[in-house]
Length: 548
Image (cartoon, rainbow, N blue to C red; front, side, top):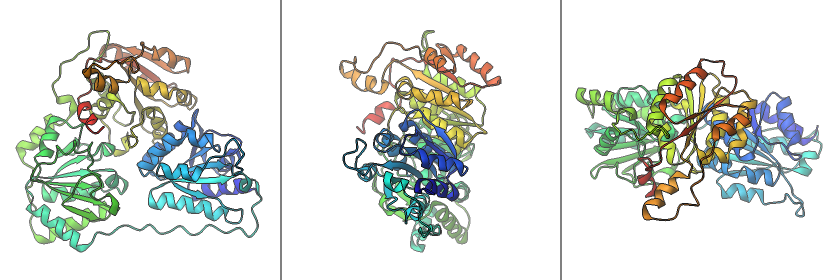
């Protein structure tokens, strides 16, 4: 058996069940071997989309996903998606053929490329070590939540696997980071003294499934509950949930978080987006951060207490400590506040003036109506851009697996591929892709992938005929905008050309056609070309650009 075939079969046996990619000569055999061993191959139309699909599949399925690319140009095409995954600490394998002959047109320093974007390079260095090298890459991705580039040199791939090839090492046992007793006691002291505690759960809380342990601790301490954007839905339907903290927060949520005397970030970086450049931290608030990585503690803002530990184990230990001390505290929770949260915490409850004029629809009204129409069991993927706050704030999700937010690198053009990966990971849910016109057109090649896979996906394009973020950032200062504005594009016609169903929306009443599509059979995706108003930027945009 050739090394390429042996590596593919071995990775499937380890647990790779989906591999996304664009196949060329260098990754042909390893990809086919994965398929022969039972993995599903999803052919993308661009490597950047393939990497993002794998990233999203891994986030929603909580499995190690794989992307397979050609040597050199295949890898460089995929780099934006790989960077997003690496910055998000998505466990993902990038299987890349590698040209080691310096005169090859495809020769580039692939390990250096991986390191430059935060991925970890591993090489299949010889036929004798091929299986052990592949297993090491897989276990590194799984155990350390890293995006790993597995370089597959062409000459090694083509060699025969020797009879005495090193067997893969046994999988290392997962090691949970236990918080220290002193840290547990100190956090318990802070919570016992707090009268207005707020918990903000982030990616780390989601990854270790800490919802129940955090709810138990919050009930004992009277804490209000919020999330970073990436963990939207984590506390869905809880009566003390404030939704997303940061730029997408409602006025009530921002008021209550800023009024906290204790803020605890659970697996959350408490960065400028989540804390509105520090505006959501009151002048007398104590800030605590819990994370499994020492380097993450205080990385984005000073903290009064950094707790090194697994979120779930830390929350359970602190709850046990407080239970041993005596009765629970009332904290921030009152009957009056609960009533306010029930009617004011949703974005759709915030009053606004509808700016639709019959030729263009207000993005808020569009999003509210879509939320009413769509089934509750959905998975929502959001691209980047001026529009992104509308679907993020106005479209609800059933839980944190219902929201896939690839924004760690802030690249536009990832939303459609994100929705594809999420849809394959959650086939029982309605997939929804929310994109701006710029990001959608940048990634439109993979609309063919949606059609080919017959995914029952709704693609909503918030079309303002511009790179809206730049328009609203530079326009008020009188800068020329011809480089970031475009003639109106008939996105619905383009979508039909790809084989999708499509409609143009200029008024919320036009969305009645979505209702008909939802009835079924939904054998083709539906693309909504929503001509949205563009008089002003999204409400969160001014705060966001202060970080630039």
